[in-house]
Image 1 (spheres, rainbow, N blue to C red):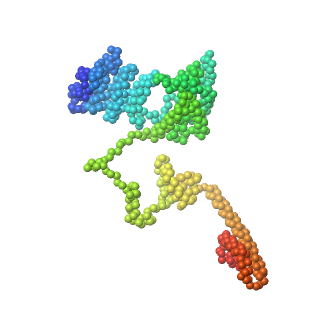
Image 2: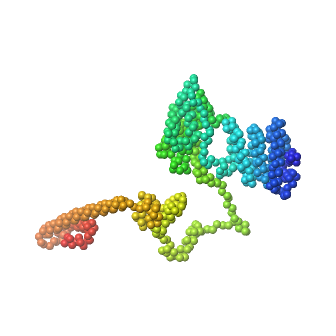
Image 3: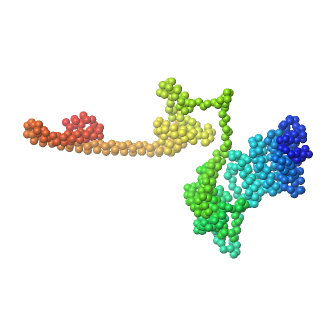
Length: 602
């Protein structure tokens, strides 16, 4: 240890003497890297030396990180302990000694120090964060560092050391990757030990609605454990009634802009308490505090967001009535937040943005906390140093280009009957039938019925080739479409049609046939009426021709008479055209041809 003590007070950077000091003390088998037993021996020496420095600093009354005087690389005064840690950190970084040794010394140092000294020690850790976070050191000491920080958090007061706790949490967030599972609440466990204690009996001489006081602070029980009301209708009704009382009070006593400016939320002190006092004497003052109201209203939004959180199963989702109540209460809470001064609308927008981002974390945890980091893709260079160029394909990618080239060389490939083959019903539904067999032991999540594309193609195939099986889809789902011949006997009985069902189906078919016969009779009656109209039209035309002939008294018409009768002739042609159209329509309706119509008129 005397060798290390002399090295600590030696001026200059650690790289100029650190390795030489270790070789002088340990005398390793290898010149630049220690073996396992040599690392253990060196760690024991350093831990004893560190304990000696801490004991001396406590006896002298000095701060641990300022005990002693050394000269660092920048020719400034430095304590013995930071100097020792710098030397060990350099040796770990250069892999001369085991990489986890620096983390073990930091853990010992925090355990031997008071909380006042731990703040200085943690300041040193923060200053060396970039070096400690290197992959070669992080892999060896991440668990020790996590244990050290958790021990500090347990020793700290959550009410009085809020800033120091925040520093530790921020360090862990930067030190560990985003996908580190050790910092996540995977199971979603709530801290039910965080109880809010309030008065159970009213105090004498206090003019306050004690029922409202108990109702207000009773909400904290539900906020600390939202799972208690997830599947308990009685508790949910009690919660909504209590919340309605609180929201009605907030709405009846709105805050003015002067009250919001008086509290000056933008310039609050850095040190603040994370829990409000629950004395009934302060109830009136707390209701006039915008910050107090915002804390309660934001708790409501967090609770509603948990109840509607994505990624839950069907059993965990709230019912439709509960969803409507949640939506109604959520709108009231947001309206109150927007009306709470100062800058209520801006504050509400920020809270909504935070809750929306929180859903991404919920989905990420539900999917198993997949790593965010992706390894960079290295561009492989050719032997001559040039980069490999990506091939350019005629149709965008290799597969399409090869398909086009193959079909161009063989034109019959596109018309080959074996190119696309429609499978038979038995062949297509065989995999699903095997899944339905209990003796196969196939788990439900691997069944073909979970494949939507497979089911959709099978329904289309059954609609073309097996209408009887396709009709079972309505009663039994996709498994009812499977042909009965493919199913084992114990499963087949479940999907066989019952005699009553067959009788009902035959009655439906008879009813359809009767309706079809009535429809045909109506069409025939309509055609008969059209034939009657056609006969009347023919008779009218014949009477008109007879009158014309009688007017001429059997003589021959002159050209002038023909000219006089030309308008009537045009009218006759138009009437004849209409008659012919009517005859064609009648022939189509009656199922006759034009020849049959002419024979009927003759």
